[in-house]
Image 1 (cartoon, rainbow, N blue to C red):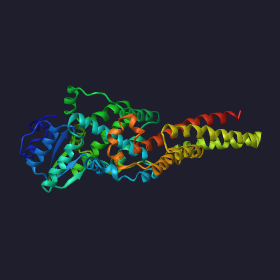
Image 2 (image 1 turned 135 degrees about the vertical axis):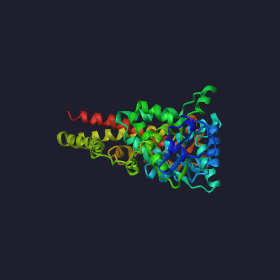
Image 3 (image 1 turned 90 degrees about the horizontal axis):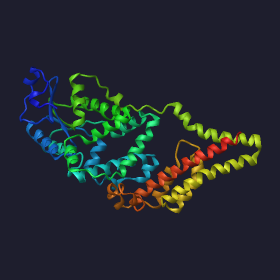
Image 4 (image 1 turned 60 degrees about the vertical axis):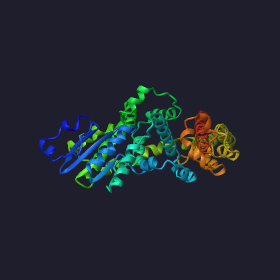
Length: 409
């Protein structure tokens, strides 16, 4: 990024852009009509970034401060004890357990990174908000809702690439790779989260579009439309080039389009119901062709093929005995509907019978990275009671389905 004195602004733009201090290449100045935008590209895990944010806001006295946060991410970094107030049973009832799992993994990654680097990711954003409040400057949370970003990313990921995304997430949970001193110095000079997203984007290009490119445009639009003639915007360094390009090229940005989540297509709904229809239809056909006894045998095989591995999943999770029984009983039926999976049923029962205690929420960021603690933490055991019976049911569906369909012939 060029130094401010060498920024590619026209002479007219330069004459109208008066700064009260000299800054390094982390700061870029743009103009949009009569508006001056002082763009700070941060490394998210650098104390130097925190200091430059503080210095620029103090010296430039902007009319507004924009930060690369949405409501949910702001709550996440400003309230480290937010997990304690979660209504876990309500989250399960809304089938949002997988979303919570992703958030916990990210929180764990951020804590480990902060422990190694001495600065928690997002500290510079909190400093920008603190300085703005100190000087009575309006704050704009300029980023797109992280839930929309994740849902658009998932919807735009090709089916055969979704497994790569899930496996990368799971592997990151238990990554214990030591970071060298040289690597730590490099991490403090770059936007770590954006770099991770770019690397993932090389494997799944559609993810880069959603996680980086779309947010560049979303941030640029909100920064341009923020009130006042002088705005300081604090964003990850990985977003600076895209934001500058959007503003300089005066690109049209439709925020509603960037927030739109397409409904599940009727084709996918048909695929979701195809397996249940195939199984039920096959058993009915067998009954018509070979009699009620044959149909009963196949139905019993379906029950056992689903119930046993799902129940074993509950046992492996060290779940409550009634949770294990629930897994065995409900799996044969939940496998015949795409509306709800057995994991949500068993997770709800486990959370009801052995609810997490406050300590589980307080230590979850550390516990999630240590495999042995998953069975000691009541909170993480709820996730095990979700994951393992689900895996068992998937196995049982394929085993039972293959056997029943083969009996047609």
